[in-house]
Structures are given as C-alpha cells and as structure tokens.
Length: 363
Image 1 (cartoon, rainbow, N blue to C red):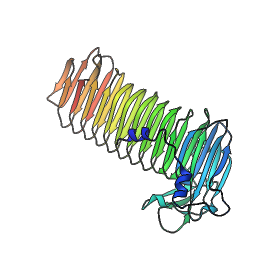
Image 2: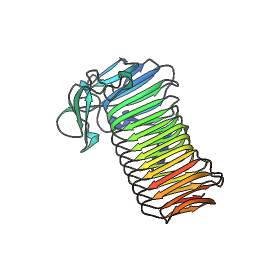
Image 3: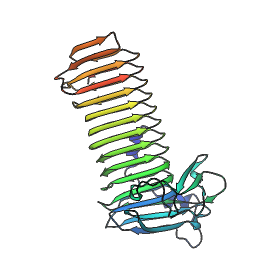
C-alpha cells in the first residue's frame, strides 16, 4: 500500500488510545485516573511529550483539550504542566529521569536534549534555541518506564504545534495550522484546512487532503502526498521516495538524497526536483513558468499536456534523450544534449542527469 493510501485509510477511524492501553494491561497506577483531561487557552498552543502516540482531531469551543493516558510501570512519576512557553500556551509532560524506556520502540533508541521545563527541539517561540540536558529514550534496558498517549482536540482557528521525541502521530479534520515534529516515528496527516509542517528525524510521512501550504521533511523514510492545494509544497527526505497525486500548487520543491520522485496529476508554475540517486517522473496537467530537475543517477520522465510550451535544456551524462512532442531544435550533441523549444516556448525546462535517460512526451 502506498504512503498516501495509508494516509487516507485512517480517516474516519477513531484512534482509541485508552482502549488500546487497557487491552494491553497497562492500567493506570493506583490513585491515577485511566484518562486525564487538560484544557489549554490561547490562539497558539504547543504540546511537548517525550514518548507516546498522539492523535490530533477537531475540537469544539475555544480551548484545546488534551486527553492524556499514561502507561508504563513508572507512569505515576510523570508530571503534566500547563503554562506559557515563549509566545505559546503549552502543555508539557515532564519525565524526571535522563533515561526513558518506551517499549514500543523495540530495539530502537533516540537521544534528545530536553530543557528543565520539559520543552525540546528548536522552537521559534523560544528564539530557535537548542539546549537542555541529554535524555536517551530506548525500547529496552534500564530507566524510567513511562509514556503518555494523547488525543488533542483543537478548535477551528487555533494553531497547534506537537513536539514528540519518540512515537508516531496522526492528525485529521483540522481547520487550523499544524506543526508536528518527532525525532523518531511516522506521521500521518489528512483533511486539514490550514498550513501543515511535518518534520521527523526517522519515519515515514503521509499528507493527504490539505488546503494550505505544506512542508514535509524526514531524515529517513518515504513521503506520500495526495490532494494538496496551496501556494507552496516542499518535500525533503534524506533517504526514501517521494510519491504524490493530484497536487495543485504555485511552487513545488522536492529533494531526496536517495530515492525516486513520482508525482502524478501535477499543476504547478514553479517546479524544482533534486535527487542524489533515483528516477524522477512528473505527470503535468498544466504549463510551467520554470521546471528544473537534477538527479545524480536516475532517469527523468516528463509527461505534458498538448498545449505545453517551454524552452528546453536537457543534458545526460550517460543515457538517451527523447522529446516526443512537436519541437524546434536549436542544438543537439549526439544523444546526450538537447536545446530547443516546444509549443509557444514560454517558460523554461532544465533537466540534468548524471546517469539515465530523459524523456518528454505528451500525456
């Protein structure tokens, strides 16, 4: 199943975290409720949690409501604090040890710097600071055995930022700007009216049905995109593919260190794709003002509509060039270089691949 199909699949299904915890035998410690609910005021709200699963859904009223379900043998030692941090009202789960055991990580581990108030990551609200004490989170070994799963209910118009060190996250049905950062874990986002920014150090990212600007970044993992409508879409992965369908934006930026790029049904005026190693396929529905593709190793295939027009500059270090549209050739150099124009010649297309063929054809 492709990443974008996974994103659509979770829509409409409740993410019943408390039920999952009870079924797994992780009942709350004596004196603690099975689920705690906190309310946070403000137009911009931040949530900080080192370990757990987080679901973000549409809420009512004017306050963000956070349902917290604790887990682990040491769950009673966790503290939950609410108060202003920088320019945001924040809910923070405080872990009182520098070694945390989160069994869902299995054999994995991650290390992060955490401040005394429970915040972490570089945060624009805090002036971009990256400080604090080092905390190690692992799936086994000695340490504080505790985590906190959350359901975050966000009213329309309230922007929310989720900061999670270890664990996966989901967001669905928001009418708000969303920022979601995790050091280790996958993130799925769907049905958002607002700007979306997702950043994970390691894990896949799936974004579907968003009306707004989108930024998706992962150090290692695939990125899936579907039904994106906005001014700007940026996708960056150090290792992994980027796939997409039905994308309509003014500006598209895609960068992969190692992995292919395939975007179908694309409408964009300014397109830039860069991959160190991997093929690139773009199925264009519209004309372009500027399109640049650079790949160190991999073929490039571009499908264009019948009225497509641009000046072309195509280069390949090793591989053939095929321009299967009416064109006016200005310059060719054997089979590795092509310069010319198609249609009205209004716009520019520059494609360069170190190793791999280049194909431009009508859809």
